[in-house]
Length: 227
Image 1 (cartoon, rainbow, N blue to C red):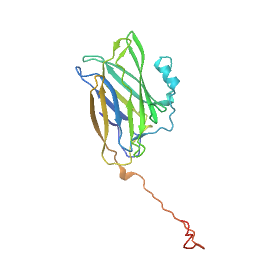
Image 2: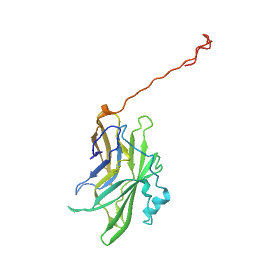
Image 3: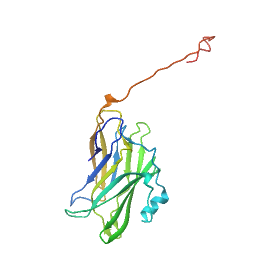
C-alpha cells in the first residue's frame, strides 16, 4: 500500500506512507522501485544532506546522519512465523546517489535482546524526470544476512514527511497512481500500484496577470518594433 495520510488538500503538505510485505513460504524481499505521479514531490529546501562520511559512520555503528537531514521513519519486521521482530530507524536525505539527483539512507538498528548486530543501512537513489518532474525512488538490494544471521524481512513500512514539512501534494486533482516494482532475492518481480488523488483544487488561489509593452516610435518595416 502507498499514499498520503491525512487530508489530501492540493498544494499542501501531508505525510507519505509506503508498506510492502510477503507471507511465510514466499520468496524473500530484495528491492523496491517506486514512481510517484507528477506533482507529488518532496521539499528539498530546508533539509541538509547527510554526507558520505556520516553514512559510513552509521554503517560502522560509530555515528549517524545529522538530525536536520531526517525526513522520515522506517520500520521493518524480520523473522519467520506469526511473531516477527520489529525494529524502527530514521530515514535521511542524502546527496546524489547512483546517478539520481538526491538519495535516501535508511538506518535501522539490528538489535534483538542480547544480540547487537549493528545498523542495517539501505540506500536509495531519487530520480527526477526532466520532462514531467515525476519522482522515482530506487532502493539498493535489501540485505539478506548479517554475520551469518538470515534476516528474512517480512514487512517494511516507510513514512516520510511525518512533521508535515516534506512531502507536498500535487496541485492537479486528476486521479493518478503510485506505481512500484518489488523484487525478490530469487529474481522474481511484482508490479503493484495504489491510487492517488489530491482534493480541493478549486480552493487554490488563482490571480493571473498579463502585461505587454511596445515601443513603436520611429520604426520601419525593415526594423520593426520591440515587444
